[in-house]
Image (cartoon, rainbow over all chains, first blue to last red; front, side, top):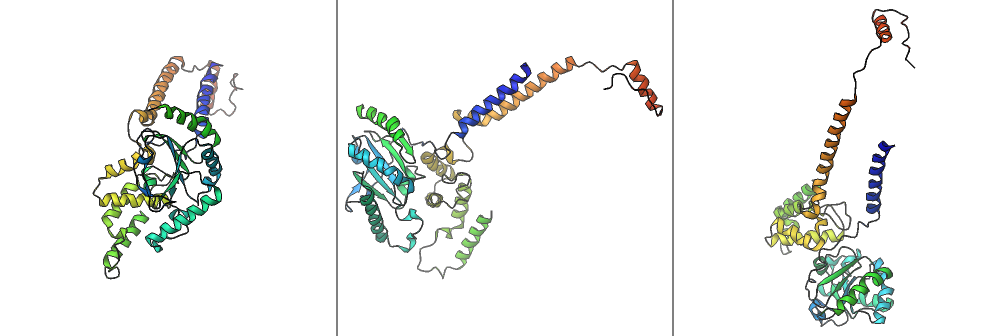
Length: 196
Length: 164
């Protein structure tokens, strides 16, 4: 009897390891940026072409930076939740419009002049927001994806929770689910709002 | 390798035909040294979108952006280690195909040796115990007689009693 216990034990250990491994999403790569200051940038705004946005503008507030694009299918799934959340006035959400024209895989930017790309970006992004609702206090335009690289963006949508001092405290990879919002983002945001 | 050759060939061809490119910005692949270094660095990096492809081989758009980023860092005079750090600081150790040796990865690096050592110790213990248990087989008188009869060429050996 005892001789069967050892292989059985080893098998159970294997089962536990496999069960943990199989239930993890390999596409969720933990971000090294959590706990680090949000990388600085300065980008043109969507609604007001003359104005720029920089994370320093949000100093003193707890806020969400949501990376989105009109071509992004998962963003469409996440969007109603963001719109409802913004309506409740929970947290200011800043949109980072990521490679609106370059990312759709159809338009060859090399054939576009610099200002043509920005015009096209504004057209598509604004049209999408007016169709699906605009949960953002403003959207910044990351047309070439350089800011996305600084934030370690590798799949849209991604959302960063940033505290009053400008430190990234949480990163949501993929669409925000009601569960992630209720169980992770809101409790953490509440706690961060209490910090000075 | 194919990719590298193709890139080098393209680079050489472009280099041989400067007239054709007069007045245009030099294409990025025009510098074979930069291109070769970019590929040697990005072959060691994982593409985050299609995770089993290297950054050098991937056709994902993010991989293209990152290769462009690596090229521009090379032209800025950054060392290979600095470029890797640049990507690790944004995407984490996950981008490295060879994870660094540090406390959190000790189990990953040394775990297999630990298991091997455990297996060797187990094997030695088992063999020792077994050596103590085994008694050399003894030949009964009947078996010996049967064997001798066989060796002598007797066509009808007496069956040993204990044979099933």
